[in-house]
Length: 87
Length: 202
Image 1 (tube, chains in turn red, green):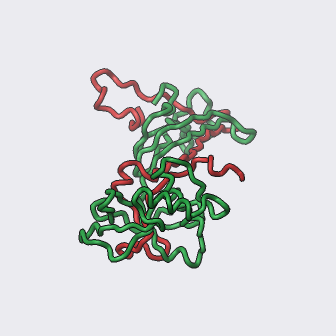
Image 2 (cartoon, helix red, strand yellow; image 1 turned 135 degrees about the vertical axis):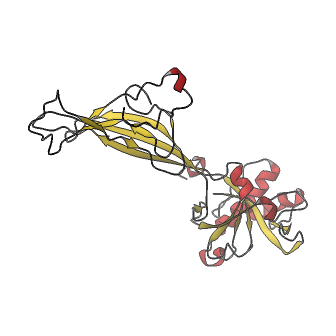
Image 3 (cartoon, chains in turn brown, purple; image 1 turned 30 degrees about the vertical axis):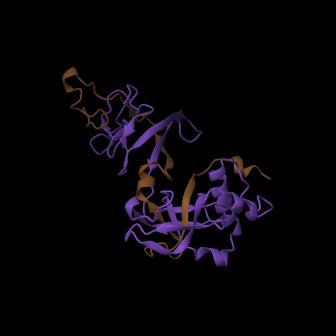
């Protein structure tokens, strides 16, 4: 009617309707570890981080974004380019 | 990190990784704001770093401005999460459920006849009060569709009749009501009842 069946938003799960170990009472469900390892029910989370550069109105001094320190040839593989302190 | 001081698109970020290498001017009693000029101000590193146990990836970087903020950097971060205990899953019938346990496949019940093993176990007590007949019809028609290789309409509103889908199940050696004999994965013995089992869209 609204073509909802053509909108992919999930996966076809093989379901057993049964009580097993008691951990599925009160609307709980039990998942198969091997199914998860095969990629079942994987979720993507998108988050947004907002950074602002402030500017002082009286002096015009702003925050800066600077390039990371140069990684010298002998440092390649030993220095994480994403974790560095001020230089 | 690129030469612009921002993390590159597609870069994996672990806990503590810097993705905006920001420097702020040092304004304190020794360097009051009035005495500083843009030329002689000292800067200290004040980076934005990623916090989280699982790594995330830089999806998009947006550099923009608004009337309030002259310079805005929006970093869209993408992360894939594995289901864990406490996550909530729902079928399309509003039958939502919280993960109560994740068991290894060897402890899951299985069909000795076909080798079938469930991805998900759901308690039958959710059905009588909710009256989600459509979910049961979806299970039966889905199972018939899988076995016959055809699309079926698993809806409570004039879809494929359960009598016909049941016939397809019987033709393929299954019970017409969708209930199968399963073996316990824990004891290896036969379960004392037939288990209603088949595919449901989650």
